[in-house]
Image 1 (cartoon, rainbow, N blue to C red):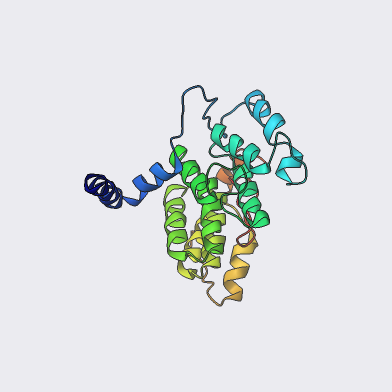
Image 2: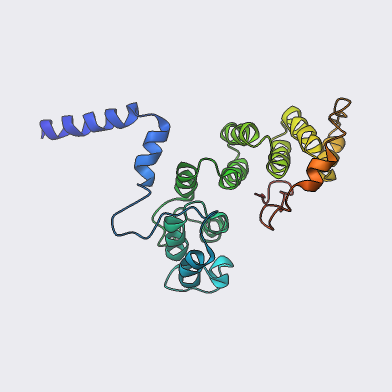
Length: 245
């Protein structure tokens, strides 16, 4: 008995000594398992691969939480996220399911919503949409320090993406980090995108400052020559409610 207790205590101490991300990885499972379909990057998955999963596990009824397919919503949404860890709509729907069912994890979901976000970030750390969705989730939970870490990561790694910078700025506003929100607003203008939402929020907060001379006159030619963003890419956040790629 003493030997067993000593073994359990040693295992606990080993777990506590692990970095936070390693503990999350252990708690949230491996990304790929034998005989499992996937995982695949949702951004690059072709229509056939997406439809194969979504038609059976994440149709409009599941996405709206109005009609089940194979069983409880948590099982079908969870399967979708096992195959596509960075599926943004499935992540948002799982988050909403937690709120609707008032339990975390939801019925038939293998993991908590925090774990589903952790898996998305672990699988595709360069995909800023799940990271912004996670930041938004953390803001709603009043975990502002953790949210700021995610926003800082996106701000640093998407300097050439005006839509990501815009959405990051909107979320900075939600945590009242006005200086960083202003920096994002200036970046967006410098990249040739004129969206008033972020500027208007800064003006309302009394924190707007015009960008330095020259920065405001962004290279319009470059902006007009850039390819038009997809629907998902061009859907900016309005406050802390949604994000765009």
